[in-house]
Image (tube, rainbow, N blue to C red; front, top):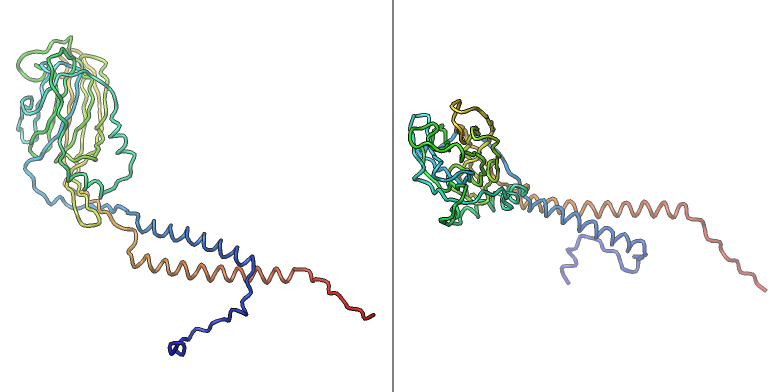
Length: 325
């Protein structure tokens, strides 16, 4: 009972409070709107934004992994895979990747389409990268297939280079592929630089081109940007992404080399994508306190103003007079 003496806030006796139907309706409306606003503030607190910044590439890597999964509408024994970088280092890659006879299909990847439509979620991206990532293995068979799936990963110098898939004997000495089987129609399911991570889709993934001639070259010019993803807990993921422009050229026999040419170059800058909360928890509490207090005060003032207007314009009720008989 002694605490009542320290209560500095005056209380209104219940007998002096008049409860009305309009006041109850206003209370329900205020409570409903206030709940919606509070839910909106909590959703803003839970939502994340991505902060983009650039810095000089801090890593000096002499080697870089390149991942391929490309299907060409030609027999495997008629294709050659080679790489030549700016330091004139040349790699014969036909023995470093799998060349799997298959049927050519232009079916699109629903997985890639789904990832492209989703907004970037750095936390999910890093969580998925922890899982074992590997290109799926395809089974070989002895059937007479008319296409070849070039599939696998290999190491190359981290220098500007030209990766090309050409018809055997065109551009290099050796056995010469018959012109009747030359068809550079192709589908790219995977072309990426660095460790292979799931849930990362590059511009050329799930793309295809139809060749109109036996002597046709498809040129892709790639600019590779090292990228670091950092989630709000500080976990990071190092990978690469790239932009691409393409050009196709048709020519006559002995006027060029038919094939697929991927010319890539590396940017000296690194893109850092950091996941951040839109506000801190303390900021959320301040906004909720201001929202609740301000909304009740505003609603009370509106109720008083409307009540005053109502009773001002309300017609007076006629009074009954008593007559003594």
